Image (tube, rainbow, N blue to C red; front, side, top):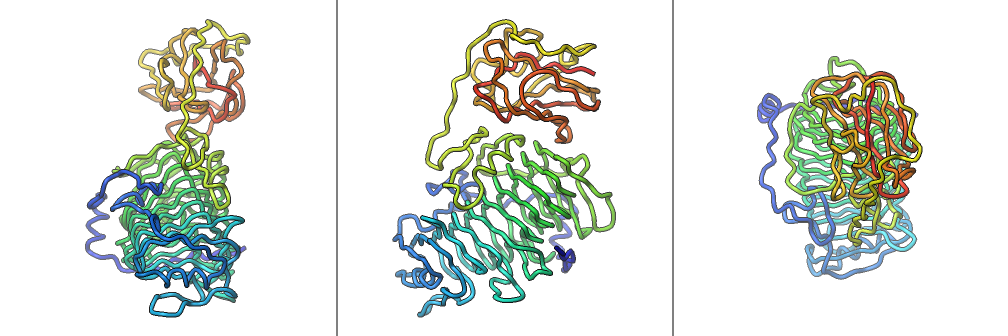
Length: 520
């Protein structure tokens, strides 16, 4: 399958030159960080929030013509409406509605309107070879639909080849639990899956899948189109995408808890002064997953908590500036809303269970488990056993336990009441750390680089056998040192690091890590 890699480079304004020179993040005015009642998260919860058609009439549509008619039959272009879609929407059943409203034959065109929700119901909604286009509109929700095989060349064509595209003064859009897919790249007639340009702001893409495309999506159509900003991507799956996951020109984006598999050429590409906060994502079997590519107009990134599993990196060169192989932050990005992240190690499991249409709108509970969108998060009660020794001690490596060295420390994800990170490195099997649920992470750290080649995870006797799947991660780089199941001795190639993290991604009950020993 061939992909086109060429990108057109536009002129750069004096404003951009200043932004690139300073590396500053200008977030602008932000509204309250409280999420709206609709459940919109991320930047879509800002700037007054995103509620879509809440409070308005609900209508059912099984054709594109019925969707357009519903949009046009409102009392005004801002009258709230929820359109529940079931069945296949295609060129054969989509026609523009009569009257003064702006609809079209070859696309679902949400133009010059506001306060609309389009949601798939029943057996599901599939927009087949027909894109969704948002223009000069606000307060839009698109949820639980599939948009597939939208082409810009060949036959039939729709929406410039974009599955979902937004442009020209669009703000407050929440796209959630959608499945976007193509069957190739530009040479096969496709363009992009999720494009935002010409002053599109306050958008969230959550719990969605983007698959089998040359281009995942962009923010800004050229290096002089820099007004689009404040975009959140979380709990999304990007799979078999060549590039643009996304491409960011100017503005600010936040990417967390996403699962990236087979990014074939490049991944998150902030350029032309763009700023991206990239945290707790899982990158697998991919190339150049973060950096500025195809230009020397640099972008900026703040990275933390990401896992790089079989990721390859090219060398820095002209118009190719990867962040790896040891990605480091080159800016800081302030996020105005509150959010709870899953540990990167459990992102593959959580995203696989929740992302895309037809998943019952399941979401993460913020602790590596899933829940319905209305269910309150659960708080498991930790075990209180303090039995002094495990029933089956793991093999003892030779040498000194580096976790007990002077100056060593410990930290981790949220901990259960009455437990402490420091309990995993106090030499006392009668104390322990437990996560606040069945999954979580705990780390041992040092003030300077320390060579480590093995670790021993000891459970409290009353909790022996609870730990299931895990990953041992070099927290300095996010590289997975070893993965497996069950507590015990873990050996791996000797690595010099300042912090090593044991990430529990599966358990039969609340784990109790009595000791996290490390050895050279």
